[in-house]
Image (cartoon, rainbow, N blue to C red):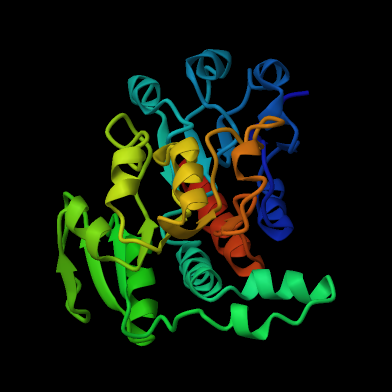
Length: 307
């Protein structure tokens, strides 16, 4: 059974109903993982609404000749063949800014957790220990330096929160634009890595950024610094990261995104014995509030394009 609008991943129920009141809608959160079945359902569809797990490639677009608009429940577009969309005059609409607050809060939380061994201490307590002295060696983030690799909307949001907590901010971005309210120092990537106590990634995944944080880049990081990735998994070489975490050169890492999601069995085995890594299942931008904002921004934009 096809429909006018096909939704392949989760969104706010009220936002979904908004579309159902206008036209036929098929929502099936498993379609992101079953491309052949998705192809069979898109023949009459005029719109697709997806997150990052749905591969919108030429094969899907060939199976969906009537699609006019693709709503992206999020901001990353690396799962969408933008060139093929342009050839077909298909409008791609990301939900820019809708989950920025949630991601920024995650980054601040991750810095606090990594720079003070809160998670390790909590785990030790549940195991019957009381490690006050060894776990009391963390650092305040006030007065420390945060390097933002990428200084777009989310990076700026993080900068405002970090500055409010007394951090010094550096940023590397080929398209850097000053933030009038903040004293953000523009710097090269090597300068950022060498000086920062915490490095947070906010760049898209493309040919230029694939494994940008490789062994050489990780080695350039300040001894004991922490690394946070809420952007895309392919930006970091995870084997190289595991080596630097094991040696203590990198003090800790919070990783929310992965090259394949969910990761294949054994894909994260290099982190299994490490106690200075915090892995989360791509939830930095997923909160109740962000889901509502992302969903409504997307469905309203799709509706404006169709009706």
